[in-house]
Image 1: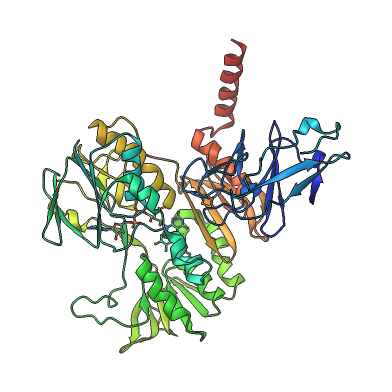
Image 2: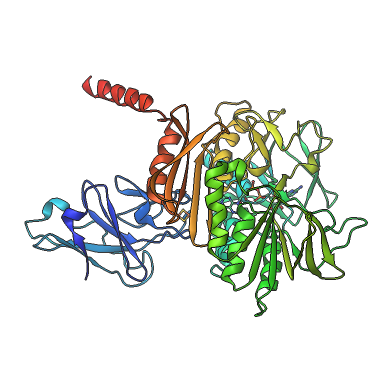
Length: 125
Length: 408
Ligand SMILES: Cc1cc2nc3c(=O)[nH]c(=O)nc-3n(C[C@H](O)[C@H](O)[C@H](O)COP(=O)(O)OP(=O)(O)OC[C@H]3O[C@@H](n4cnc5c(N)ncnc54)[C@H](O)[C@@H]3O)c2cc1C
Ligand code: FES
C-alpha cells in the first residue's frame, strides 16, 4: 500500500501523480477515486495532467481517452490499456494505492473503489 | 462508390482509411504508398527514436488485427505518378493503373534540400548529409550518431525538427551547432518574445545557435567535412542535418485537373476542385491554410471522407491548429492561430524556469496559447479555444444561455 495524500488535498475533478516506478495517477471524480498508470500507453505523456470528464481522462498530448474504471482506451491513438490499481481511504481520510501486479489489463482488478463519500465510515476497497 | 483509392500510406492516409470503414464504406479500398513500410509515426524520428529511447517496432501506427479489419489492398513500395483529368485513374510507377470512384490524396510533404546536396545532375551527394522525414532517413542518421565517437554535428535550420535533432544529438553526447538563416528561428510561428525563449533552450544545453546567416556550400569530397556560411565562416562538420522545411507532395499531380498552389487546393471540407477527390494532411491546403502537424493529419480525414462519400461538402475540416515539440526535456505545445498583430503575455509560471503558459491576444481576445512544460493549463485553454469560448463576453453569453436553458 502506497500512501498518496489526504482526501482533503485531492478535491473533486483533480488528480495527483504518485512517483512510483512506473508512476501512478490517482483521480477523484464526482463519484469515486481511481488509480491508473500515469504514463499513457501511447507515448510519453502524464495522464495525471490530462482532462477529466466523468470516468474518462483525455491524454494531454494526443487526446487518447482512457476509462478510469478499466484502464481501456476508448479512442485512438492509444490501442493498449493502462493498468488500474486499487484505491482505498483509511479511517483518518488518507488515500492509499495498492499497486497491481503484472501487465496492463492482466490483473483484471476492479478499478473503481472507495467512493469519496465512504470516507468517515471507514470503508475501504 | 465501389472503389476508393488512398494515395499516401502514412498518418493521414491511414486515418482516412479508418474513417471510410467507420463511416460504413464497404467497397474496395486500395492504399498506395511509396515507402515499403506499413504506416508508422514520424514525430519520434527526431526524438525518442533518434536517441534510442524508442525502438522501431514501437513506431507502428496500426497492428495486424486492425489491418485485417480495414480489409484494404496495400500497394506498398509503389509510387503514384499521375492522376487523370477526371480524377478517376491513378497511374503507378510499376506501369499499372488503379481506377477508382473516389480518391483520397494523402501524400504528405518531403524535405526541402540544400542546393548541392542532392543526387541530381551536376551536384555531388556527400556522405554525412541528411534530411529527416522517413524511417529510412532516421535509420541512416542514427547509424552515424551511434558509432560510439562524439562527432561534430551541424543542423541547418532552427525550426522544430532541426531543434529536436539538435537536442537528440546533444543527448547522444555530440557537439552541435544550429544554423538559422532568419534573425530568429520560429519567428513567424511564435512571434519575437516567445521565439527568443525557445531559441534560448539551445544555449541552455551548450548548443551554439548561429542566426541571420545562410549556408553557401557544403565542404568535402566524398564525405562532408564542413559547412560554409554566407558570412564566410566555415563550421567543421562530420554530420550535417538539413531541416529547412518541407514541400507538399504534389509533384505527381502535375497534369491532373486539380488546382495546386503550395499544396492541393481544397475547400473548407478538404474537397478539391473535383468532388470525388479529397486531400488530407500535410499535402492539403484546406480553406487557404496548410498545416504540417500530426493532429491536423489525424483530425481532417473524418470530415474529408464524409464529404467524399456524400459527393459534396457537408462538413468542414478545419480543426484548431495544435502541435507539440519536445526539445531538451522541455515539452512545447501550441494551439490556435497567431497573427502578426497579436500581443502575448505570460499568465502562469515563468520563462526563467522554462515552465509557463502564454496567451496570444488580439484586441483582448485570446486566439492562441503556447506552453512550455505546462500541459494541464494548456489543455484547458486549448479546449476553450476549440469550443470558441474566446472572449469573456462569449463565455458570459454561453453561461447565460446555459443558465436560461437550465431554468426552463
Ligand atoms: C521528424 C519529424 C518530426 C515531427 N514531429 C512532430 C511533432 O512533434 N508534432 C507534430 O505535431 N508534428 C510533427 N511532425 C509532423 C507530422 O509527422 C506530419 O504532420 C504528419 O506525418 C503528416 O502526415 P501525412 O500523412 O499528411 O504525411 P506523411 O506522413 O508525410 O505521409 C505521406 C506519405 O505519402 C507517401 N507518398 C508521397 N508521394 C507519394 C506518391 N506519389 N505515391 C505514393 N506514396 C506517396 C510518402 O512517402 C509518405 O509515406 C513531425 C514530422 C517529422 C518528419
Ligand atoms: S501520449 Fe497519450 S495519446 Fe499520445
